[in-house]
Image: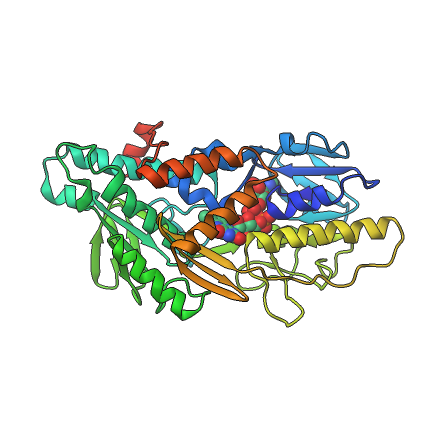
Length: 415
Ligand SMILES: Cc1cc2nc3c(=O)[nH]c(=O)nc-3n(C[C@H](O)[C@H](O)[C@H](O)COP(=O)(O)OP(=O)(O)OC[C@H]3O[C@@H](n4cnc5c(N)ncnc54)[C@H](O)[C@@H]3O)c2cc1C
């Protein structure tokens, strides 16, 4: 039984191709999502179907997998059953690969005002919110309200925050520049707020400094060492300073899924299941946790980062481990993580690349980032179409997915 068809769960299932096992893969969505490009959907560059693929389609040729669309609510470890709202599903081995969710540092009431970006629904809702802010600014006669509507605040300057802020600035300053008659979309402010002292803190300082310069060039205001103290319908508070806005995007924190609670496992301060070297949950024979929902240490004792390659490697490893166990062969030894590097893009001309042997910034880094992402889309559907779409955007600043499809709901959301 594999719960979650993200990078970890999907690679575990694929790794068991041809093995003498019956796999049940349960996911609450019917699609596998390429999260690294979610910000492109949120900023109207790509359509949802460019970055998400039906799980059934991906696994249709793998006959030992049954896919179920259902939400897991708990696990009965004594009976070895996974519990959804409507049924109990027996397992011999259980792989928990349910990823992560947004964390608001205890301020759950901020979520409706400051949506985060984790799913297709989140991205489409953010796209609506952003586009509706421009529409409403075009219609209002109230100058103060217009300014508020044209302020866009992104909280958190990790890769997602930087990518969102850079692309929003391009949307406002280039893509929409000729589209409105009563507002100048180029007057929009995009403000990236970060409590820490630098952007992209997981990267070397030189690359963080470059990213700030690139953001400035795009017109993004970067506010470092400013912690958000409140989020509400009228805007955010940075200490005593109010920042009026109708669009707050939350990229400041994640915590693991509830999988640890389901099995009563020990978790770390981000809610991740603390697993053993073979990714098993201590005290629970046959239960494993991988990807963003697990706290995995590499051979140096360092925490493995919550990124896609790490989840894929864990999924592949676990498939090998289970295969050797059922075939009665010796275990492959503990999981070893191979860090390939980190990448982040800042708009359409700049990126930073932090590989173990190569640190790069600028246009070349952007092309590397693009090639890497196209490469990772291969094996899914239509990487060529996504590439062509990007090329068109790159040459024209066009963002073709600028559709508002549930206006009324969003009009309410945006206050
Ligand atoms: C906006 C964004 C940008 C990112 N950019 C990058 C990047 O550029 N590079 C990079 O390497 N990493 C990036 N990441 C991180 C990367 O996407 C994750 O590390 C990776 O997806 C983790 O894989 P996973 O399998 O653990 O979880 P996920 O891929 O999140 O998959 C979890 C799956 O579990 C399912 N699920 C959850 N709860 C339940 C339930 N109760 N019942 C049934 N199913 C459930 C979900 O529907 C989902 O399909 C980004 C993440 C985000 C959110």
